[in-house]
Image (cartoon, rainbow over all chains, first blue to last red; front, top):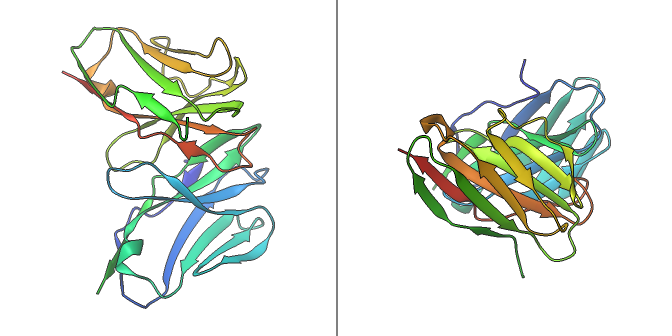
Amino acid sequence: QKEVEQNSGPLSVPEGAIASLNCTYSDRGSQSFFWYRQYSGKSPELIMSIYSNGDKEDGRFTAQLNKASQYVSLLIRDSQPSDSATYLCAVRINTDKLIFGTGTRLQVFP
Amino acid sequence: GAGVSQTPSNKVTEKGKYVELRCDPISGHTALYWYRQSLGQGPEFLIYFQGTGAADDSGLPNDRFFAVRPEGSVSTLKIQRTERGYSAVYLCASSLTGTNEKLFFGSGTQLSVL
């Protein structure tokens, strides 16, 4: 079992819709969770971090964490074509090692 | 510098050769990470430095890979006897103290082993 798992996609949503991206992780002791966005040919950039169970909202983005189910998700409201990118889930394992999933490619079509 | 700088941006080498990839982190950042990213995959953890020491090198694939950070700033990833399977983008990232803060990534070095 991989430490961090994501569906590779692509996930296609129309402009204005809600995009829902999911991630599961294997280390029950993990405490810190992150979503990074990576445009094609570019480096990852942090968009959200979450440490406690529940929801965390930042603009059009909402991160959701359920430690009992070992599940993290990212919702993007009012999706825009500029949101089209690969979204990487990352989980802090043990000390400070940050492990990434394979990423989910999101396509927002006009 | 303003951001994480990686050089070279592209490196083409032949199978069996030795390569060095350089990372210059953001000034004052004590934590430095190396990742390898193949096409269509997420970044694969290689090694993490806290200051001058390697806090976790469990991601290095084998003993051909080695990284140093002698003065707690610039880091060099060294790869001996390169294989075609080592072709990937090698990403460096830094953060102020550790991974509970934002990681700032460099633009990466595209390594191509022919």
